[in-house]
Length: 426
Image 1 (tube, rainbow, N blue to C red):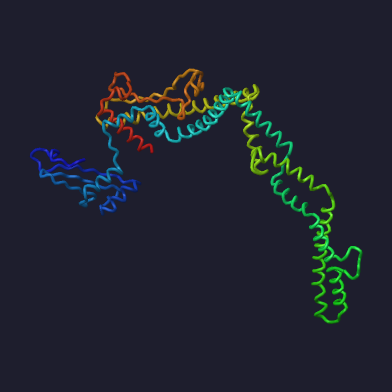
Image 2 (image 1 turned 120 degrees about the vertical axis):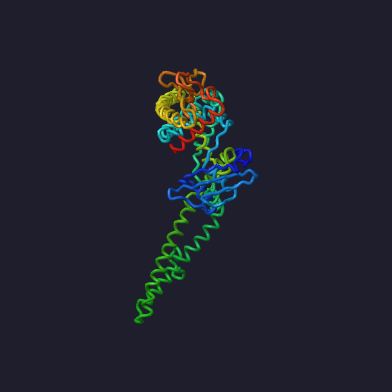
């Protein structure tokens, strides 16, 4: 707070306030104390002091060291929660009151709440899908017809992945078949020799065979050692000769093959003009169309199946909501007792806190209604519970909503008591 001379009692030289702080695991506070060179007591606490004299001068000390006033301000931000009457606005929000219970309960609430939210997400997705299929049945039926027609056209052609690229290469090869046949025939003859066995054209295999015979009969070790290397060359050339022979057979196998390939390419081009830039894109379009059609079934059977899933999920959701409510009811009783006990040290010894956990009843017009223990209630993202803090000002007084039963100052003390209790819970 600001150091004001008015804080000094008449006849006194100065006023001061002193506090002992337990640093605990507050890293920010520990760093401030260390940087200031303050002494920390054996129990891990430190003493802070602020004084103002009648002449208006202000002094600040931390751990026995004189420090700038700003150091105490920084330390207080790390260790002190300050509540004023304006803070009551936060406590008036129902969601804030529910959050107080959830924070106090810890895992007892967070675990069932997580399971509740997971089922709720699935339930909402089914509800939304059922609503969309029911309200847009005509539009979805028309879209499904278009997709079905496209899939039928694609399935009739039955393209293979990358087939258009393969066909382009095949067409280039078939269009130049004569040139390819001449080149491959000449290469085959050069490797294997002439087809009529002309001794004047033995080919590479014949020449290697003749060289091998000459070396095999030699008595020179160096020449004999070259024989196996010639055998390796002969095996390689035999493989090349066989592959060239197979290639020539494919060129001669079907004279009308080019016409067939061109016709197949035309079929593929009809698809790529309508659905995608290439065959792979067409296949991707078909996969997406099948996925979309699976969500467009508006038949009575499909709608009945969705409705059945919705109802089963609603039952499961209600079970999780009930467990969540029970956990909050148990936590509410403990929290109310703890807050009441804490308020006794804040000049509110006769006051008593009660916390109610109620379910908000709705009718069937609520899109998020679920039946829990025979009642339709609103299934929100945080459960089906409305939480309210009630204050009994003194014995015999009726419990009223805390913002109606408490003055501004009392409400601030209630909030302070809550923060203390939550700090212990954390």
